[in-house]
Length: 100
Image 1 (cartoon, rainbow, N blue to C red):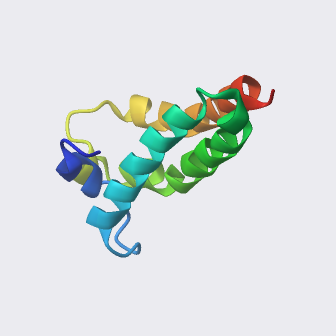
Image 2 (tube, rainbow, N blue to C red):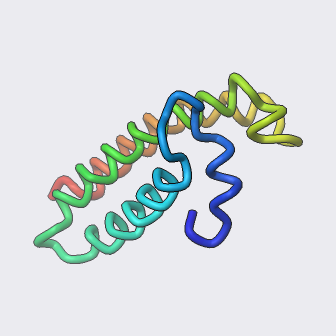
């Protein structure tokens, strides 16, 4: 997100404002969440934050499925579709790892 933001900017749905800012904020949120799961004291809150982030980025994953030529050229469409339910798996995984 922070090194090559242009690839993430192009998957932001057009109805969302400030795509560059959203990419920056989501990248920083990923880093904060990853660091937050390390100490036991912040693990649960970081888990909820990461779950919120996974929900928040779902529209971008859907945008990729709906407009693959513009958002993910060369990526097989089946892989884009597979990302949608993968979000649920990732949410369950984050919850399992951070609930204690």
